[in-house]
Amino acid sequence: MEKNRASMALQILALSVENDKRIEAVDKVIAYIQSTGLDYEVAAFETTIEGDLAQLMEVLEEAIRIASQVDPRIFANVKVHYNAQGNVLSIDEKVSKHR
Image (cartoon, rainbow, N blue to C red; front, side):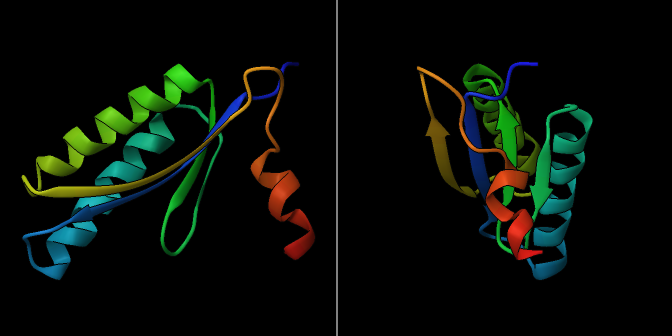
C-alpha cells in the first residue's frame, strides 16, 4: 500500500457572520471532508487531511466554496507538506505518541 505524498492542515474562517453561522460553515466543511474518504483529523483550530496533492487542492477549493455558501467572505489558513520523492509522515505517525 502506497502512503500519501502530501498532507494539508486547513482552517476555514467565515469573516462576516455571527458565531453560530461561523460554526455552521466549519461544520459543513468538515462534513464534506468526511465524505471524501481521505484520512483526516479534526482538532480545535484546524483539520489535517492526507492524500495526493491534487486531491488536497480539490478539497481546499471545495471547502472554500462550501463555506462561502454560509458567508461570502472566507479566510483560509493552509499548510501543505509535500514530498515529490516519497511519503510524508501520517497523522498517526506524528501524534500517536502524544495520545
